[in-house]
Image (cartoon, rainbow, N blue to C red; front, side, top):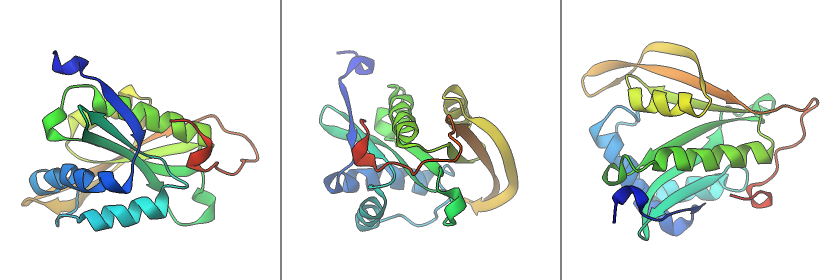
Length: 185
């Protein structure tokens, strides 16, 4: 079977998925600058974040042949109440499942969920350079908003951080963001 045509299931993330998600993201932490963490995460950290955030913010995984191959999730942009309608959005695809379209598929589902919930803005933070991530975000309607120069030091070099934003239709005054359980994935 052509790997690009393998069946993909997009579904809400579960606690049982977090060890696989941890492995996916730790690969990037250890080998690249797309994630500015310098220490690997534990599955327990992922579980705690999922349990703390999943009622308000969508967390989705992609499964290929029964294997968790990627995650897209949202989280708070800032803690202050005025930011309640803006969330940070993130996607990671396993290095073993690249070029199958999983990143755009996951992100499309995530952004659709966020829009249905009533978020007004999704922000992506991209460690630069990262042309594939920039292309993905811009293809999905994100617009470059700014760059912090030499904001992070990893793997012996300074790296910029870019900010991209995608807006959703607004209502004035805004309505409360709906819980994830009230929208379809």
